[in-house]
Image 1 (cartoon, one colour):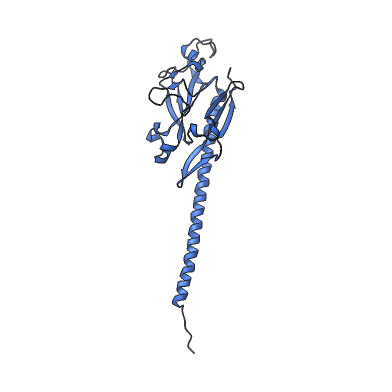
Image 2: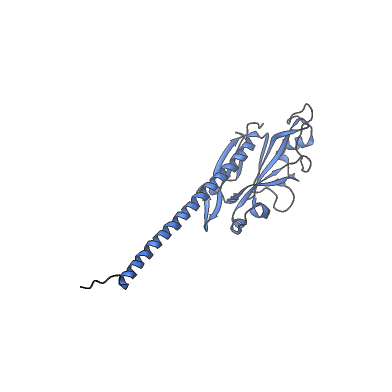
Length: 247
């Protein structure tokens, strides 16, 4: 009796079809796993960035001796687009930092939400989508000799509150200032939801004189594998800090 060995063409085709289905399922699973891993990693980075920037500003506010939130009436450096506004709000703080000639030195910092396009290409990732959809947060610092006002260094026997030095007087009267010039900008946060597009209509910075506290609202906005991802998804990331040394 003759016994046929091997597979028929139909059996081979069926086996190939089953193998194709299995491979397709494996590929799909790998793709979904990669997407989930990428998304999870991006969210973790977004959360870390939000923690860093709010913690950094929070430390500044806690140490501040003067605070001002401005959406009008203040310009930092000259040039188009440098005025504080509802879409580009500013938070100004005066803090004691270091010493000069044996006296405590006071530095004026301004934090401003701005269009990403103002940042040098050397200081940001090349991202065409981000240029049109996110803002950055920049820190502007007064300097010892190259800004107006310059850093405040009280004279002998003086304190910040009693100093007759003009720079100190300017910083004490921070609320009345309309123009700050020569401040050095530094990028401290990228990929933020524009201030005028934050969920719930909140503002990036708000000041409550009664409690001497500043509230910072930020939201991370990134494009991950072609999809825009906001974190937190439905509200801003909020930090409220009380200024311990404010008058």
